[in-house]
Amino acid sequence: MSKRQRLRYRFDNLMSRGLGAKIALLGVMALVLVGIAVFAMLVFGAAAVDENGKPDSVGMMAWRSLTHTLDPGTLGNDAVGTNWPFLFVMLFVTIGGVFVVSSLIGVLSSGFGETLDQLRRGKSTVIEHAHTVILGWTPKIHTLVRELAAANTNHRDACIVILAERDKVEMDHEIGVTLRGHPKIRVVTRTGTPMVLTDFAMTSPGTCKSIIVLAPERHEDGSPMESHESDTIVLKTLLAIKKIAPEQAPHVVAEVFEASTERVARFIVGDKAGLIHANPQICRVLVQTGRQSGLSAVYSHLLGFDGSDPYMHLEPKVLGMTFRDAVFEYDTSALIGVSTASGEVLVPPPLDRVFAAGDEVITISHDDESIIADGGRGKLTIDAAAIIATAPSHVHPAERTLVLGASRRTANVVHQLDIHCGPGSEITLVGEDESRMPTTAERIRVTARVGDLTNRALLDELDVTSYHHVLLLSETHGRTQEMADARTTVILLHLRDIERLAGKRVPITTEILDIANRDLASVADADDFIVSNRLVSLLVAQLAQNPRLVRVLDELFSTGGHEIYLKPASHFVASTEVTFATVCEAALRREEVAIGYRLAANASDESKGFGVVLDPAKRSRIKLGAGDQVIVLATD
Image (cartoon, rainbow, N blue to C red; front, side, top):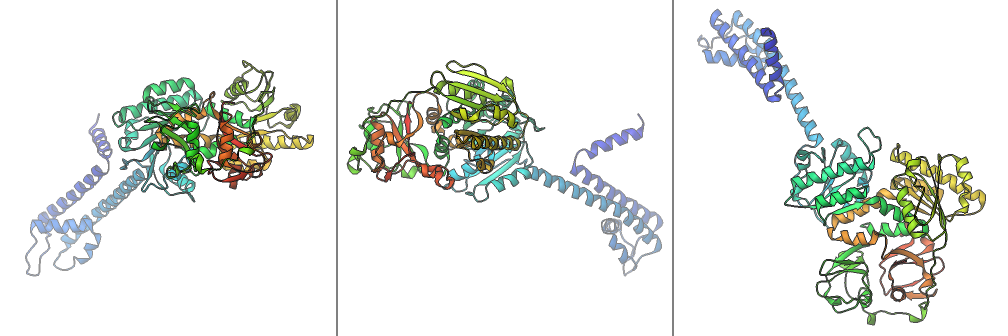
C-alpha cells in the first residue's frame, strides 16, 4: 500500500470523527498558513515597521498573519509601514485564509444542521414525572390522545410521551390536528423503537404513571401485519419494559390479538397489568348491538371521559346495608358492584349481600366528586303503582343472521352468535377470504360463501331482507383503513337500496374503523355503527388512567354472568311520569340493576348521545314510552 493511500485512509478516519475533528483540522491549516507567513517574512525581511521605524517582532508577525487569515478585509489596511514583499506574503495568507474560513463556515453550517436534525428527530431523554407513555403508533392513537386529554382536564401540567418509529415532525403535526378544539395537554414525541432499550429509556419509564403498548397493525411498507406478528412485537416490548423498569413497575396497559399471547404477556407483566384482548370484546359488542340496537352508544358513554365512568370508592355510610338498599343511597350515581376487602370484584353482587368493613362501592358517576351517598329510600319517591308486577318470559327464538365480511373478527363473531342465539338459528357468512370464515358452530348452523361484497349482483342473490339481523364487518386484509371504510360505506349503500326496493327494513350493524368516516357512512342510514378502533382506544385510556378498573371492566366485558342489556321500558314501568328511583326498584325486583335509559326519540341524534342517559339522578322524573329502553345489568 502506497503512502498516498495510507494518508488518504487516515484522512477519511479523521473526517469520520465528526464536527470537532473537522474544526481541529481547519485550525491546524490556519496555523500552518501563519507559520509559513512568519517564516517567509523572516527570510525575505518583509516585516512591517511601526511609526518609529521599528520592525515587527515574531509575535506581531504571527498576529498580523492570523488576522489576515481570518479576515480578508484586513489586507486593505496594509498600505502604511509596509513593503512589497510584506504585501505579497499577506496576499498569500489572505488567499489561503479565504479557503480556511469558507471551509469553516461550511463545516459549522453542516454541523449546526445535523444538530437541528437530531433535535427535530427527538433523540433527547424526556424529563417528566407522572406522565403517560404510549409506545407505538396506530390509527387508535388519535382517539386515545383525545381521551387522555379529557381525563386530565383537571390535572395541571399533565403530559403524554409518545415513542414510535415515525418522524417527530409528522407526529407533532398530526397530534396538533387531533387536539385542535379539545382539552389541552402537553404531548412530547420521540422517534425510536420501543423494543430497543436505549430508545425506550428516552421516555423516562421509571418516573411515568403508566405505559400503554399499542399493537402494530401494519409493516413499514404499509402491508397488513398478521396477528401473531403484531403480538410478537408487543411481547418483546413488554420484555423491554420489564428489563428497564423492574423496580418502579409502572402500570402497563397492552393490546394483544390472540388469546395465547395474553397468557404469555400476563406471565411477563403480572396480574395487575391491563391486557386487552380486543378482538372478542369488539365482536361481543357487534353481536349484542346487532341484537339490541344502541348498545354501542352505551359502551361509548361508559368508557368515554366526557360522560359517566366507573369509579371505586370507600363509603362508610353503606356498611351493614344490603346491596339492594345501598342502590338508593346514591342519588346522582349508579351503584353497580362491590370490590371486597379480599380483592374480589362483584358486578353486581347478590342483591342481599351486606357491605362489610373494607368493601368499596363500584359506581358509574359523572366524576369522582359526584360519588356522594346523599340519597336513601326515605328521601326518594318510588311510584309503586307504576311498576309492572310481572316481567314477560324471555325465550330465545330461532334467528337468521347475515354476516358480511371476512376478517380476523369473523370467527369470534360466529362464536358470540353461537352463545346468544336460540336453538335452530342460522348464520350466513359472505366474504372474500374463505380461510377466515368458519363453517361450523356448536349450536347453530353456519353457511359460508366466497365473493366480493361490492358486487351488487352478489348482494341481490343473498335476499338480505329475509334475515333478522345483518352484521357488516370491515375487510382490512391487504387494504388501508381508509379503503376498508370506503368499501364498507359502498356496501352499506347497496344494502339500503336493496331494502328500499323491497319495501322492508332489516337492522344493520356496521363496523367502521375510523370515527372520522362514521359521519360519511351514516348517510346510508345504518341502525348502529361500531367504531372498533375507538372502542379499543376508550378501553385502553380508561385502564391507563385507573389501573384498579382492570377487573371491573373485565367483568363488564366478559361473556356470562351479568352483562349490559337494553330492555323495553314497558317491561318495567307504565307509560307515565315516574322517578328513576321507581325504574331502579322495578329492575331490582327482577334481580337486575338499572343504570340508565335510552329515549327512542333521540336515538339518531349524536348531539344528544343517541338517546343514551347513564346514571340519571334517582329523584329526576321521566316518562318512558313506546320504543324507549331501560339499560340494565342482567344475566339475560
